[in-house]
Image (tube, rainbow, N blue to C red; front, side):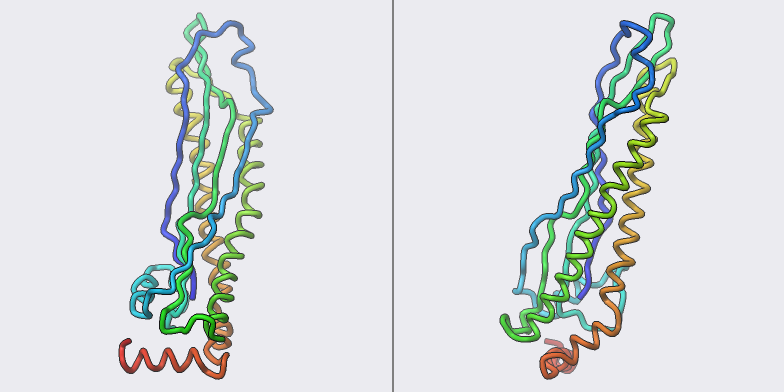
Length: 234
């Protein structure tokens, strides 16, 4: 009854060919580079066709928080982090060149969200409702995380571009490469921080008290299903 998330970071850059500078001001600082961060959480799909054994197989990954507990429900998703960075490069008559970002567009969130409940748990039963409510807690963590991190990412990039948004080099392609690599480093760092924070918050949902509460709820329905599986393997 916990989330599964593989690492998935997709960084997409849009580059433009360097142009000849018309005036020296084209290589001045650009303090107001637009930065937009779009949080996305795809609507969950629901799969109640998998048996306990199949869900156990899906649950076997390094993120498992309470390994000795039988998993009757699972929320599975893929984190996404896409970064579009249109850049402009200019070349001056003296051979110097510069590159700056015209804007930064980040899409961050979760896709392919699927909630599984083992088919051994009758749909509409008390236990089914308990598991669905528990999985909703995991989804709520994801949504809150997006609300927390979207403005943080936006401000980090704005602050960097405000102070360091122009790279000046002899080679315009190299100047654009340096800017691209630095912004990718910032976004990757924040994306990994977000994933680690997500794991920590999800573990708080999957605490021992919560597992015990669900196991003992509904007149022991979950405990009976789990015990039957342990004894018969199905």
